Image 1 (cartoon, rainbow, N blue to C red):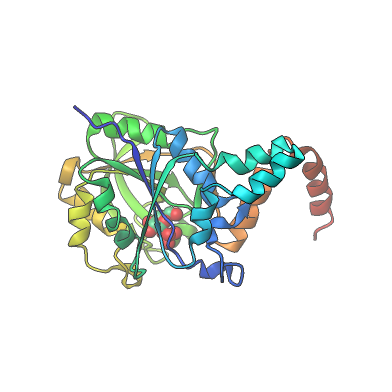
Image 2: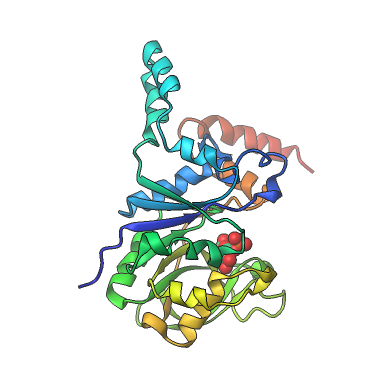
Length: 296
Ligand code: G1P
């Protein structure tokens, strides 16, 4: 009997140094993307895929995260008094979005190390990992598709996207071979952030994974890699190479993904999302056109 996947792990322990000073006292996951903190998009995505049990791997300075997914009693009472139902709904929405648990990473020793902290909570079930820097447009299906493949293949599944080779050094890069399914490939090799010119393909890992619990055993024996950090990509390379727990497959995503990982991409993500919003798009679009016409 395959497990029904119910658990999502969201690493949120990064220091967010690319956004200093904004992230001096606030986690980068709380930076607003239009009017919602980035992390809420990710939790909403997990919930939409049926994953109501969310474990966040946090670190210092992350109290705002816990507060965001908890009741804000004073604020709620004030809005209720004013009869501002619309705003009250916005505040209350994130309170019961998911059953959220927290564990701290301690030393920031890399993504693989962060995932290892989920071992106790996850146990021996397949589980999903969602990285907060990658936002997937809710109109495009990815996580559900990956869970579907995990259910039939009983293997680990990663999300891939074809990227410009010039940007391959920013990603885990996969070498692949075709399967009989058009959007699914078998992973034959993985390299974390290959130096420019050495990448063996343009298939990049985007931050969604549905993993066999065996990844914990592999991570325990994974030596520090790129940046002297324990890399999830390296553990998955071992699982692909040694065909551990069914090996590793990739679902190739061709939908809309927004990167909020660095300042430029973050600004682009906000503009992309805002132009499509019913409440902001109609005014923003003509303004943007005029603004860009005046740029040289
Ligand atoms: C992480 C992973 C990398 C992946 C990327 C996707 O890197 O290590 O393999 O391609 O996320 O966003 P990070 O961007 O956190 O350095």
